[in-house]
Length: 242
Ligand code: GUN
Image (cartoon, rainbow, N blue to C red):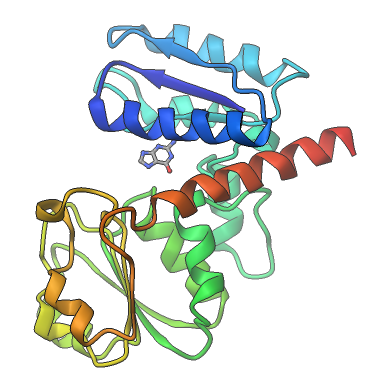
């Protein structure tokens, strides 16, 4: 596994360190690349190309967000699709979006959720449409035959939409945007930020009184994201090693 981190963002370092530690625990070698905040985009891309052609590297993860001077699309597009353990390469995301096509890798954060919660025929509401979580999770749930509505900052009357949902996936950038009394009794609630301190979670704690399932605070989805990354890395290695 190769975790590439640019700069010194505390949250990114925490995520990458968690991923590197988990690799060490299960015996996956992690070749760490830590680049300075002001690294030129061309140097980052050259590094990614080197990793693409290194036979000892089976998965590459460029931690997001990148500093503003680096074009994220260029950086993610440089990763070889068969090492794109995040599933963020446009070809992998494109296949995820198309009926009857399967990406080589599924993005780690949404990967587990759509399998676990029996999404078929449920009404799912994904809150936000980011490339990391909101968009891929909506596509995955759609593939799992759920009826999906994506609620975002321009959505009119989000309360009415969320009150209907059997599954709510909260990945909004704003804390407690969804109110506790919007949760339908018995609904499954997945808060992407629930591994963070309580004041940053996306769903107020009182939601746990009515939800049928809710991600735990603290820890939340964090351990699952790491597990999916390890699984994707293993799959990538198996394609090469057999
Ligand atoms: N930043 C926040 N979550 C993720 C993730 O799952 N992958 C990458 N590469 N960056 C992130």
